[in-house]
Amino acid sequence: MDTQMQLLVFANWSTLLVSMVLKFPQILSVMAAKSAEGLSLNSVLLELSGFLVFLRYQIYYDYPMETYLEYPMLIAQDAVLLLFIFHFSGSLKSAVTYVGMFVALWNLLVLRKWMIDVALNLCTVISASSKVLQLQYLWKTKDSGQASALTWAFATYTSATRIFTTLMTTGDKAVLLRFVVVLFLNAWVTLVIMKYKKKKSTKVE
Image (cartoon, rainbow, N blue to C red; front, side, top):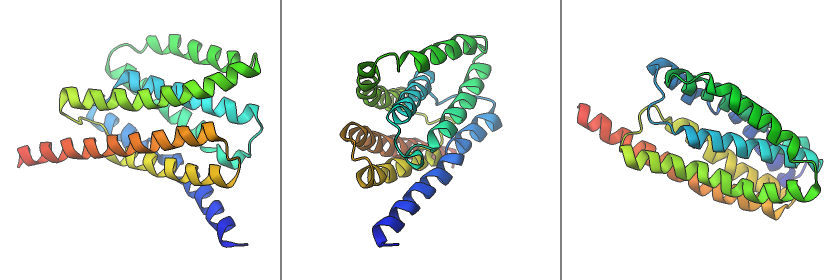
């Protein structure tokens, strides 16, 4: 096995392993604090929408499974995180409405080929918007609350590895653009969370 192939295998498997626990630090933080303070509901909703669109696109075009296998796990983790956010905000009943919307989205995307193609381009905007909303929330509150820097650092890593695996496999430019944008914004959110957590710990001292 040549070096490039070894790197590809490592990138795929490390991305999968990291994604299996990517949201765990965030979920555990929310559970421990019994609060979703510091998290933007709209950001998580948009992120989940972006994950669903991206997964549907990959399946539709029959891309290699190893290049998107983490997405079902990310979707499941986001769903759990959303349930906790709804629970601690006292609006758990709202979850049913969103489940219906996501199921409808999943089925509508593949009615026409142009719909799934347009959806992927919008997916980049959706994914970027979810990160921007989280950044805005942090800037507004100037408090990272229960936002987990480790979760966002994990997301930054998986975005970087997916740039490499996409270049090595499908070369899909729309997919590459999405990962480049998401990499930049994930890293930015990570740094902002760390900044506010450092300020908070300094004040406590």
